[in-house]
Image 1 (cartoon, helix red, strand yellow):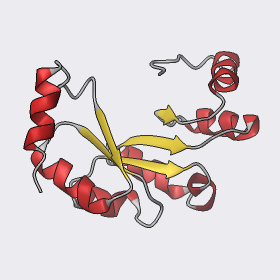
Image 2 (cartoon, rainbow, N blue to C red; image 1 turned 90 degrees about the horizontal axis):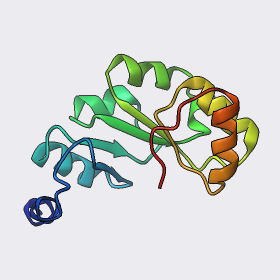
Image 3 (cartoon, one colour; image 1 turned 45 degrees about the vertical axis):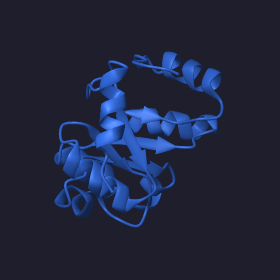
Image 4 (cartoon, helix red, strand yellow; image 1 turned 30 degrees about the vertical axis):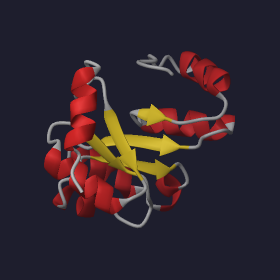
Length: 132
């Protein structure tokens, strides 16, 4: 399996740019392939069965954990930060959890309640960088 065709499509649409595209996957295999074939792009593993250090050793430069992982593995955020990894959390729908994740300083928060999150970020004086 190669990502050559996908990379060609990104180029065709002017999106072959690590500042414009982040890859996420539940598949460790896919993350490994993206990390190997598209260096420079952020690739986040969507799972809770591997610590940041283990992923980093495999060339994966981002984590995308369910927010509860940061409650049960409190050291993982610091570990990811020390390794220079990007950090995302999902799916954060309760205001208290939004506040906690913003307070931790994660890079991205995935939610089903974007207006609530936007308000919480504004209240916490956290600058919203991007939204979809």
